[in-house]
Image (cartoon, rainbow over all chains, first blue to last red; front, side, top):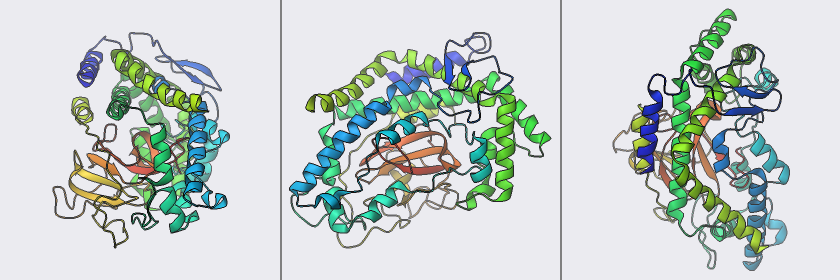
Length: 311
Length: 140
């Protein structure tokens, strides 16, 4: 049982001396500005202006890469166009489809951890505070760009959520059918793999939050924030301050706090230190579940090769 | 919550691929925040395995603080924020990403289209959620 293995590992790693500050990190975290940051050694200077930009973590290997995402997206879009044409939908009426471009795939992959440690970029902090910069609701945009008749073909329901009132539409519409075209034979195994990745990520996140190296980094950040007049014990407390989340945009107080937050993250080297410890735990928990994760990665590879060979 | 409880929750995750139209009233349009889990909605449940009281969302939420579980099931009236144990995504294409922190920050659990799961990372720690394209996984 994979989960039990993971629990045992988590308990083992929580024991004093079983791999915390004493052991040098065997995992380096890459960030474009500053090369590799090694756990346990808090750098005096941060890596670059956007400290989380381009960050990779060991678990990223168990998700589609940008190139794979793009390949799957292209194949799905082609499938949807064929299906919609068969159902009499005009080619122009199909667009926009919710499949990304190559540029979107690349930037989504590069930026996947940009907000993992909350706001990390001084320009974003100065403009948006703790709020994410994008204000485009991709899903609302997709549903609002299409008529009910188009949605009935594309997703099998109308914008109101009612089932498509016409025959011949596959379950989930043409988009649902496209997803099934790359489905693996053992759907349950795929879901179990997703749950395992989620569990490893969760365990590593919480283990890092309890790790003395991270607690030391939080203390340094907290002292820096106090010097600037803001009192928070941990970075996510600042992000989650309920005062910020009563509106969809940042006010002056939120922006001032976020700017100080990013400056303190930079001056204390918080994100390189924190992410290196998290990467360290991810690598350990991955190793403890290697066979199951390899099997899951093989299922992802199957989906990619199903698309590659079909072309 | 202890790591072991979280893991037990993840291990107990059951995956039910549901039919989009099941349970949807054929005539009424699906209103969000009405306590009925209908097409195109993300539904968060108070208990694991899509049990207990629920709250249904049509659009992304940067902070769950204003919302409470609806209806008369277990947990009805409790805040949705940091109290959801499981989720069901009734959208046919978009992945719902449930975040540990407000404003789509921190680690997250993905709820794929037309699927249901117990929450791993975000079990009783859910603060926000966003909808994402599947390929690439770009969130709005």
